[in-house]
Image 1 (cartoon, rainbow, N blue to C red):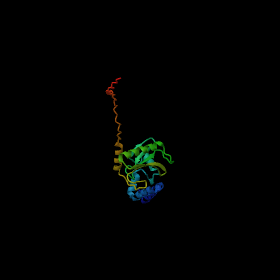
Image 2: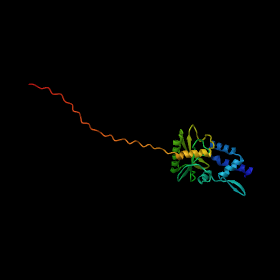
Image 3: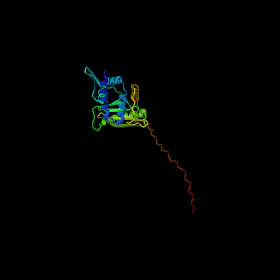
Image 4: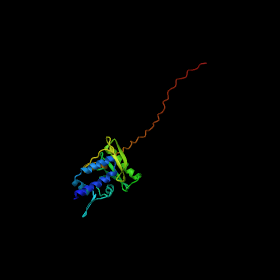
Length: 215
């Protein structure tokens, strides 16, 4: 168990990690961290493998949480994957089916490879069809020094500055099941029957007899 002083240090390190986040997200994350009891904080850090236990004490793992998700060290609910990226449901979503797309190789530049954008658009299309939001915003953002893509379904007027709430494991799994089980029924156009053209014989009308001309 961490001492009070160690817990204070861990909280300080967590808060320092989120300093680069957008202001609204930073405030929400700060509220969540501050709301955790000492026991809940230790449980969270242990469960997500963010602390290493040794005889010298517990230290916050300095590895970026996005890298931990990619490496499978932090559990996540996956919606899609390709050779370049992984799409997982946000555990503190702004709206239903809020998703983040994480590059498998850390990106620091603003340019995003085509394959990553393709995965984001694929997930966006599925969310539109399954949950029918007003729109789905696909937003590249920089968090903790990494470029990721946030897929935000907009049902009302949600933005990245909107308040977040913690989603239960059950809620996340239900969203995944709905998306995974969805199959788009493509309607094939009805085959048009070839109309046979029937040529009707022309009806010849009898011409009136010409008057007899007499000399």
